[in-house]
Amino acid sequence: MTPSSDPQIFAKLCELLQPFNEAGIEATTAGHAGVITSLYVLFTPLLALAIGRTVGLEIWIACGLALWGLWLLSITPGADGLTINRGDPLVLGCAFMWAIQILIVARASKVLEPLRFTFLQFAVTGIISLAIAVVVEKPTLAQAGEAWGALLYGSVFSVCLAFVIQ
Image (cartoon, rainbow, N blue to C red; front, side):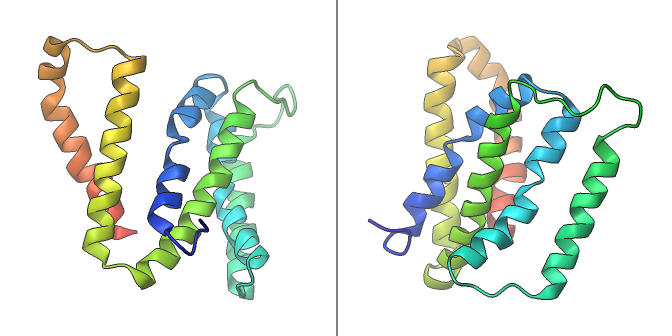
């Protein structure tokens, strides 16, 4: 199976790394997490080049400006210098996978019906997230009952709208 044979599966595999990203964020600083996560801005056109797509000069200028801005926002003068925290490699790996997901979604959006693709992303993400939450968090029925409103709001307005917009 290749990304061209079933882009939905490969996009979902990329999303499976979200728990690793969260673990990485817990084991690093907010500044490191912000800069490293935002490297997907650079990884996406680099990966596009690797698979034979052309990337215009305006994209490279935008990447450079984005990286420079991220550096200015996240690195403070007088700090202890550049350090690598335990969570940094996890966050970096996830940023790389999000760049892959962006390319997969870009391709899938040309060959799949958008609302069907959005529904499948939403459903698969929900099922995977629920399974991980049950195993890792071990919620009680009372806790689940209290969280339904927040879960519904987050699902519809954060996840579903994000999938439709992308």
